[in-house]
Amino acid sequence: MSLLFAASCSTQPAYQPPPAVAPAPAPVPPPPPPQSRARSTGSVGASYQGDEMAGRRTASGERFDPDALTAASRTLPIGSTVLVTNPKNGKSVIVRINDRGPHVRGRSLDLSRRAAEELGITDKGVARLKIQRVDSKSVRSGTADTAEESVSASTH
Image: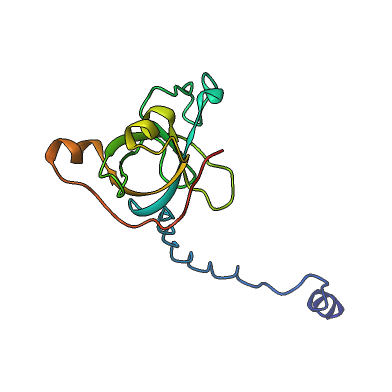
């Protein structure tokens, strides 16, 4: 009997079944893609980059060419094309965004010298221009994708 009593006073804990496996939480859907702060149409202040930047690498990796129809923007996607119009004289030009800038508060678009010349803004260096983003496929089909941007730019 003392054996039975000793067996019942064992120091091992009583058997407990393993805990139930909690169901995996439902997968969290990925967040929506960030929306660009840039808009593709609107009125912006603009300036131009002169010849002093010629040959320097742009954010796209290419070298800056003041004779090319390009521009720098902090918000528009690299590689996007933008129709830029000077409302004071009606002149327009299509530029490709290939760099980031301008890096001066209150500025949002720096044009190449050639684009600025074609728009007629090189005398003042700064102008309020209208922009409209145009995708390459939209140019071919005759339509444009648009939205609004309300930031300013001026010269370096």
